[in-house]
Amino acid sequence: MENDVQPKQNHMSKPKNIVLIGLMGSGKTSVGKDLAERLHYRWTDTDAEVEGRVGKRIPDIFQEEGEERFREMESQVLLELLQSSGQVISTGGGIILREENVAAMKKGGLVVYLKVELSELIRRLKDSDRPLIQGDMETRIKEIWKRRQGMYDFAHLHIDTTHRRIPEIVEEILRHLS
Ligand code: S3P
Image (cartoon, rainbow, N blue to C red):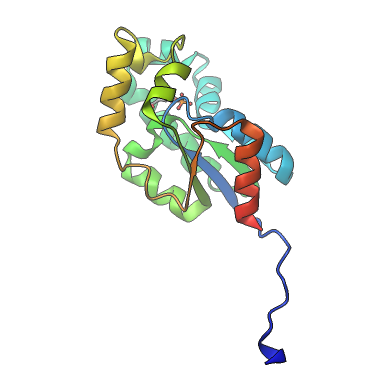
């Protein structure tokens, strides 16, 4: 029936915010910057925001003030950012560790999980100074990988980034919005 034919929807539905989650090394920062530019959204990054507020780099915050203090600041920053709209928010890999963060992200925007295979993650993080993977880096990453299994699955959208370049990943997210 002619009346049943829906007009083709080509327009993009822009969510209030887009929140990128995933393990360290999954591409949240690079994808976030490009995606924000394409959408004319503001790019924000919880790690950078925490560093700016504390006035120290993350390895120093962990070492001098402890992980708990970092997690407090991270939550505070996230909840504040989510009060605004029109942002692509790149988060730190551990943002999913607190229930209140997960609840706020689900409510505050479209949550996109950038997935990456373990072997690729190990390759990408080889020279990283991230505090949680110092020492036996490979063992540390494997532990975190195992401990956080399933914790990112609440995301509205799951995108595999393993063998893909940043522009392809950005295109895929944009496709999902249209
Ligand atoms: C962390 C990930 C890091 C940073 C901190 C802790 C984690 O962010 O927040 O080192 O617990 O996974 P990236 O995911 O941007 O590397």
